[in-house]
Image 1 (cartoon, helix red, strand yellow):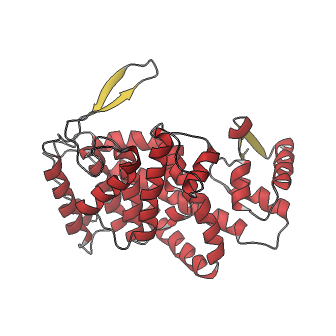
Image 2 (tube, rainbow, N blue to C red):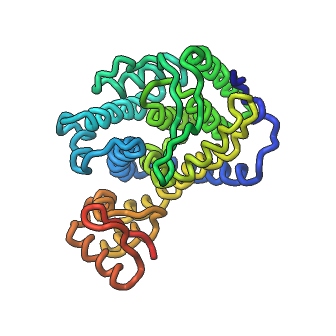
Length: 348
């Protein structure tokens, strides 16, 4: 069985890259916090966009999809779910809302983990909603030729309750150690949760909810304003590669958490940088509308759609946005990705 011990984070021997990116994240957090106090309405606009993106992307990673219009209606409670996929999406939206509004009362404890899973799975009437798996499960991957193989053997169903208890206790011990940086501890705990894979269904989505919960409780709330789940979806190849490398040898206590920590923190850093870029645009009402549209696209680290720009700049008409995007394409400052309703734009 795996030995849950995070004391290695207390030895001070961390790669220089981790020290650097951690410092950058703390600096960006201070900047965001100062802005939030002065421009509450700006952050409210960003939160409304991020909520929809988070629900969409966390489910999309698992192949659970519907149209953007339907996701907007479900998240904003304008329509009830119409099919199984939409029930899954609505359940995640409900669980995410609990994390967003109640994170100060929630904790990384078994009762809260099981409750979040119950909320997430309640609409699909899963008999194991809020309960650990009763049968062993394997993590399967499929290559480009359609060949499947077992990528990882998680903890057995029999050992899951004990290992979840040990994980929670180890986290509490490390959390209370003033010499352990919580920003490094969170991804280690999430990796261990994924290696246990305690539920029959929903482990990936739960890992993202728990990531947000632990980040929020430690003062890193950027996921409310820039979708953390969206960035994982964009970087999912890197994310799953890092997860695989850091889980190798996990059962024998020979795994190295460094790759997953770095990928997790890179994703968080991108969120803070994206918040910094978007705030500079949304928070300014002195420059022209054309310049603000251009700034949204050129400052974004990820491709943005016309709909994204409309949500970020609600006072700029869709017609103006479309015209500016057309000009940027013609001048070669941006390039287009996709077509039709899925068209997005990125700096060339």
